[in-house]
Length: 465
Ligand code: ADP
Image (cartoon, rainbow, N blue to C red; front, side):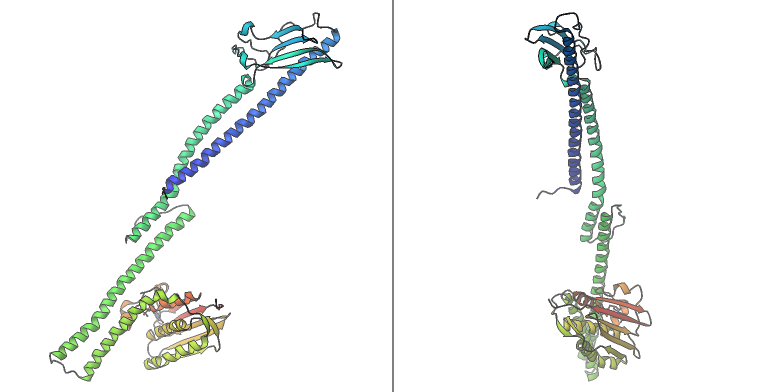
């Protein structure tokens, strides 16, 4: 399909509308006026003809014949648009004629009365129109009048209409020019922010996430577009930043255990150290750290898959929660953190049990990770409106207010060095969120730094599709 620019499209459509309106409206006005004037002129002409017929009939009635002095001599009684009258008797014999036209088709004398234009002395015999009337006296035809008159376009009204139309079309032409200017102006106003947003999107796709100049539009939709593109850029920049941080963290994390393992093995090889069980255990623990890191890295790929392909089933949610807590009991005990639980029994829900367990385990694992020995974690679940509400609150280190909005984003860790020492990559909560949202639920966190954090997850009840 042939592509056009937004600007040219806008101008084109605007102009089409304007041209159509400007052709239709003046034509309609001109047609209407023409009809009105014509009918008015017709009525007037008929009036004159009736008047004259009346006059001849009544004077004939008084006289009883066409002979005599009573017939008018001059043609002064003729009024625009009448230019000639011919009178014949009942048998069609010529009696008299009155004319404003010079003989032999010569120039026309201006008819007297309203609209007479002495300067107009040009005759157009071909244009002339004529009609006749019988002169009746007591129902008997006593004669006939033949009227000759000028057509409408020679009348003052016709002249006025011509002038009016001319002025109107001049006005239309001027309006067209003004409209074209408005169309171009409007098209620029509308298309400029769109083009800018498009350009910005292109720059974003080329890796330039931030623009220095600030674009604004007073059109709400366009402002929304601009802001959306800006936000897109910012969030991509944030993602890019996180990705870079993750890679450097990963490299750093991998380098540490490998350096330790290598130096231990080399020392043993060189005979500097003896391969004592103690040293081998230390080396193995570094290998464990490596595999933990690789396990974490693997989890990255599961973020995308986490929300998809849920195996929804009627599930005993209470049992899922109990099992997750049971798995963590020994880990909590080892660290000296108390795991209190308050799980409502027999809450049945349509959900993906395995994935929901992964969610809860992530929350319990985080709570344990960020709570020091001697602290406690409360894990509660209760059924609500066919769904469930799960809360995990700890008495741990808490999360700073500035970090709270981002902890569910992948790779986000509140404190790089702290998270590093505890081995997380910042993807656990991203997976949690993906699974919760796939269930149509929500998860929120609040925290008092230094006092603890609380995660509240709400899963609505739904029927199995
Ligand atoms: P990680 O693997 O680093 O724990 P998560 O996605 O699970 O990644 O969590 C993201 C970040 O949120 C963590 O790095 C941590 O800083 C913070 N966080 C999560 N849970 C808690 C908690 N219970 N207490 C304090 N901080 C937490």
